[in-house]
Image (tube, rainbow, N blue to C red; front, side, top):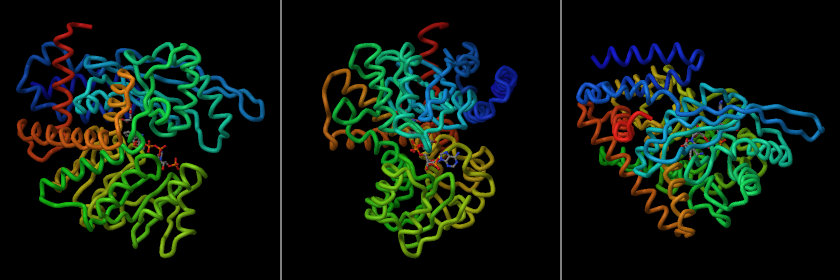
Length: 448
Ligand code: NDP
Ligand code: 2IT
């Protein structure tokens, strides 16, 4: 019965949202894993929850005109997908990357609904961004773009309405320019954005939260096999915000991190990236905005491969932290063949569906993004709480809170998977746990 319902909802989604492939992929993954819950609770079918939860509450698309350094007019497209507000104000990051389109925005906003529900905090799901490419732009150009973007976005956001944050291409610098323009327009200093700098309303540990949280989640996965990170060989993709702090926490816990990458290629450091070498990457990526290949030129014994990914490097644990669909079926087979038995997703939907099936069949520890990378938005939730009370929590307090939340997300996913007949399957556990919370809230709030 539920299978038929899922198939018919999927058909409508593909028909109604043509060419939005990433959105179809994200929805299919969630719906297929909900089957045991839908079979057990017919109330969701009666209330047409699948049809309702896959239709965004609001989609905003807008023109973003700006002037570049040569005084030429540039036009980009801006987006904000406000997907679901059943359990709190819309919440989710902004992505600035040339690949951004409506399908990618909708997949990310859809994932965010369930991720935010898992954090135990009160946040709905949203995502936004633009096809603007910050790479190679001057600070002045990035500022003018952000200001133009906010001239439209401001009317849709607010601390109790919708609270954007960072994602790919949106970090401390962009959040600063966006917040400055927001404050200027609304004439109010409030918590309408998270990821702010520490000295003007930001939270301790928000920059670290996604990467640290991902490692805390993976630590709980290892604990189920009575293991720890000490001595484990780990590969990481990407070298941006999430990758950098995933690496830092792994190094602190005694693991050996042997790879990082960017969209040009991958470095392999068989001796391991230590704190000192990681400081080089922080400076290279965050200050000089350079390419990862420079790392190979700077340290001995390191190889750099142009256009390659890290998945053929033998490892115990793999952390995809760059972007969607970066692990394909062949990569998964190579990972498993080389002995990898833990994958924790720092990125959103980094594995194609066939790759996920390989992990599930091999029964390795596989932590899907909406659980494993929820630490970022969780600390964003803590930033919102601090802003609302005009208070500031210590680094130690926020770190303790983050560890506690990641353990709760892990335990909830683990418990729910078992309860619904799929022990050890974090995909089923995370999707069902997130879904039940949002679906129940939707039913209680009536047909809105
Ligand atoms: P950053 O912009 O800081 O870094 C992104 C990294 O991924 C860079 O190394 C970039 O390389 C690489 N990358 C981006 N796009 C591609 C691509 N198409 N192909 C290959 N490499 C690519 O972003 P974040 O670290 O913030 O985000 C990384 C992932 O984590 C994303 O999937 C994001 O959605 C997810 N995430 C982020 C959170 C956050 O708090 N920031 C929270 C939860 C999830 P290059 O510099 O060459 O482009
Ligand atoms: O994908 C994500 O969870 C994020 N980019 C973080 C969102 C947030 O609001 O902190």
